[in-house]
Every structure is written in structure tokens, then in C-alpha cells.
Image 1 (tube, rainbow, N blue to C red):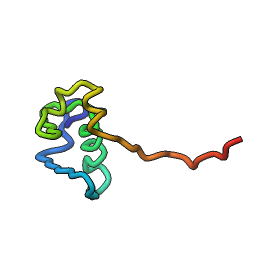
Image 2 (image 1 turned 30 degrees about the vertical axis):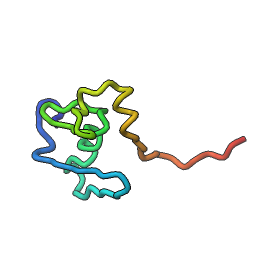
Image 3 (image 1 turned 90 degrees about the horizontal axis):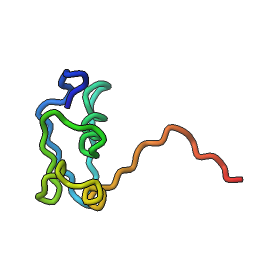
Image 4 (image 1 turned 90 degrees about the vertical axis):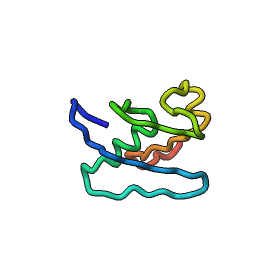
Length: 83
């Protein structure tokens, strides 16, 4: 995964299993958000493999992908009261 031709994540491997909690830990600038954005297909990797249920996750159509993957992003503000 790269920005402007500079690789920012190297040799990463993550296995996510249903019902388990997975934590990514590292200092600022270590590539945590880039890795998550790539897994969520919000950012296209230069060279990577994404396997979902034994299927090439990068080759899935958006509809097929989002039937298998859910994404909950971090909000930036407090909820506003209705009314």
C-alpha cells in the first residue's frame, strides 16, 4: 500500500474471524488506517492479496463485497439531539 509511490505498509498479514475482536496497535504513521482502508476497498493497493471466504476479495463486485463485509467508521463529532 502506497501514497505517491512510497510504500507505507510492508509484509502485513491479518486474519479476521467472525465473532472475534481484532486490535491493530502501533504508533502514529505506522499504517493502521491505510491497512484498514485497503481491507475495506476504500484504497486500492499496489500489490496485495485480499482473501474473503476463499475468494479474491479484490475481484468481487461491490455488491458481492458488501454482502460479506461490513464497515463501521469512526465518527468525528457527538450526535446532535433530534428536533
